[in-house]
Length: 346
Image (cartoon, rainbow, N blue to C red; front, side):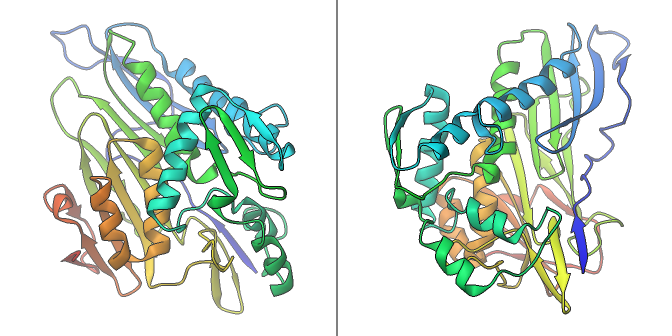
């Protein structure tokens, strides 16, 4: 059995591995600070432009705090863990978590359950990122599927009620939420002119602008050549977020078949619909993260309507080495691999 986890995708010419503080332009006081950190079980790469202090360490801590305080299902003190422990009862949560949940449940509804935050038990049954990745028995899946369905959770202001047996897992939006928290923090820092933040290669935030006015560019992984050259690059504007979901990120091979971590909430099995990856760009980290998962599960044809509803753009890569671009992605995507063919998503 072969187990594979995705290596971090780097931003084109942006990140380095050591903390530095160097002038960007000789005639300004703007400084460039870069850092590599670890949070949310992934490598975090940060590049900050500011006339003030280096905030990268504080930013890394904010991301860790959002996980331990709100999102972690393993930390019994987190709000999600407490919600799950109180399954069958009504629990009051913070305004912040209630706000996240409102967006998450709306996306679940809009995607007709293709994105579903109640699938955590089945994710853990497969144990794709753990020590015993395996194909579960159908009887095991059937039993756990009884507790899956976003309709099993109700939200009334700050009060959350889970039907008995149902649980919440916000892992599919966690990195996006982390990006949103950092973006909101930077808006309070008048000395900061720009930042690019990359969580594990799958979630990226662009904030403000570079001192020289050049574009923020994000490299997109070739899903079948993850250790080689990149598939392409996407230009981001300040205030935009990018998220990628792909079958190459976390998976194991058994009997020649790839079992990956993006599961269909209706069947409990990995999604096999001809797509290798989906990359989404929009104005929210949480939504970019959730939409990339939803669009992968839905497949390109059904995903286009959902993307339009959220004013989001996307790149779809399929197993036949076609790259499909939504209309707003045509001028911002640059192909870097001649083994792929670019087409219009329609």
